[in-house]
Length: 295
Image 1 (spheres, rainbow, N blue to C red):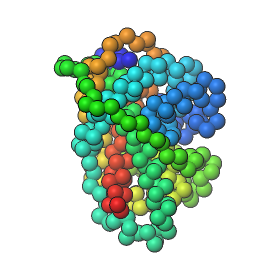
Image 2: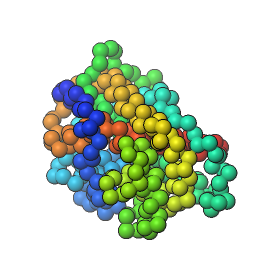
Image 3: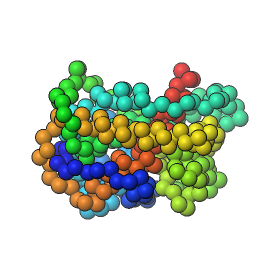
């Protein structure tokens, strides 16, 4: 449920560091026992085909995953984050690249099947990342004043579309990893594609099947990285998520059991750092809008 503690957002300099490395946390494909059961419950509850790194990271430490999911699952089950989602996303907008993706099909060696696979992966991560941002923001944010939110109509469960397997670092050739790191630099403060001092978001690793597409992403969105537009939109998305999270929190009684301090620190960093899930929400939906020009 929603935490009773008031957590003030730390200074930006304290929110840029990850408490975990998304590349090295628990592997979803090889999880077993209770961890595998919880992973399946998360996927079923959120109607997603793959977990993002926050859950795999929590599974790396004792009972952090089970205790955290037990507390926050009611927020997801309520579907209130989904109620908020369209309004939230309408305010998280980047300019699309100056060139159209179809203009580069031949040079990038991308087929229609490739683009379909890419869209499915991007859409899956967008759903997961945005719902996680809103729901976990609700968990750590005190409720604002006002009436509880109410669903106007029940949501229909979506049937997740199976995705191509997530590649491990060892399965990605070094020349392709360079493109992963370039894309991953978008939304960071330095904009550096030096992988030695960055944590690579899982979406970019999942798109490593198409290094030419990652190259197009970097080329297309680099001007907004250099102008600071991505960073600014990431910071805006955090403020919006906390505001919407406080509204979602109105609908829950604060009777949750305390979760481990390490799990709380991970969640706080995840929600409040502009280079964690916030930038991936911004970039993911910008890419989705860009690909939408193909429809």
